[in-house]
Amino acid sequence: MSTVPAPTTLEPQLLAGRWQLPGGRVAVGNVRGIIRGALQSWGLGPAAGSLTDRVAPLVQDLVARTATRCRGPLVLRLELHQPARLLLGEIHDSAADRAGRDGPGSHLAAIAVTYGRRRAAGGAASWYTHAFVWPTLPATAHA
Image (cartoon, rainbow, N blue to C red; front, side, top):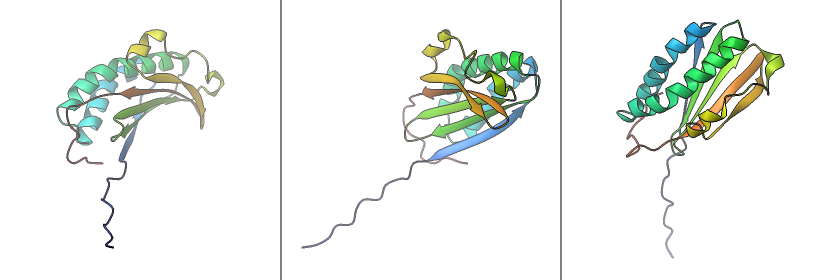
């Protein structure tokens, strides 16, 4: 009897980044470029543009809503779970007493798979997940 080695499998790849945003509504203007730059640097190629076009309005709305509740700086956090083709994002603020209230509107459900608000260290985070499809998985991704 011979032993056949198990096929090698790719480990799940998680790519993540954090970006400091200025306080107030001026933060909204920075979001699209940050998202596009992150997705391009993570190796999504042409898919980065179409994914940015679908996700940026959601993130901009979350940033705008959060900016009206919080006077301080915000933090945009993105995670790309490549094998699952899932993008997770959070907008962190310092409004700890607001966690669980005033989440994004129901009109965002068409863009987000799930969304909500949770307590986070030093404040709260509005979060969303977005499932997406691109024609083929990129051959390589860059952190």
